[in-house]
Length: 349
Image (tube, rainbow, N blue to C red; front, side, top):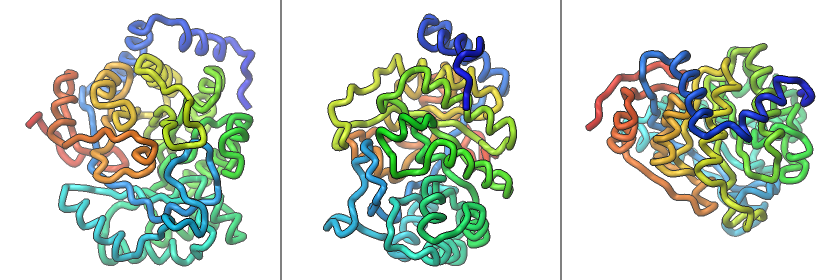
């Protein structure tokens, strides 16, 4: 647990809440420059493949899921997944992000078989199965999280996404996602994956009724795990998209709050190397400004995205537009892989 009475915690909360916006942005920008003095901003071409929308977690903030036996519920076939991968490769994609709901009707062997199928017939980097899904598999199939990850890894899983992190404070999770992996369990699974040599991203979805102090605690908990494992490659934060969810009517996050949140994340997470700008939820202009508030990565082209768009957010872009945003912000664009190795440096089209 994080001690909220320490001077560091109080100072960070004070900085987040009361520092002038541009002063906070400058602190974050300096930290970005210390970590990435070369002036490169990266992006990735990939695709989100949601293999099923059937889910029993009942998260109040999700508009994507369907309960079992719902007429709109689905499970993609291997062939449908393969077709999506081929389309991704044709557009220069270097990985897929594969995630789904907590579907009680899919056997564990299906997950192993789909990755073997991908690696054999449509080889690509598989970034998949969030800690919440791993926890669901462990419970559903009476396995340890270690066993689940080892088997997924042996079948072809390359890295873990940071999905399902939301706010890593248990009383917040109890209010909005009480059926899903708790805060301690989510972080435990990330540590297990890191211990097995697997890298992962880490996220924070905010605006779900938490306090500013809860957000600071989330960041400090991430920093603690990173200090032990070094396994997080990047941090991504975005605000709740409430439309179409049980939390509809919740006020949407404004751009200023988002920029403050991105900036404080860069200041706190001095041991997480990369910070992503969340243009998908906030739009390209705010994403571009975030590059001067600590972010060194513009995120994904998002060939396909279903979860956020189900809540009514539909920002989209092209590679050329992403490059222009990066160049206009004063940086050199470079396409990357999941581990942040560079595919190639580029110039604006």
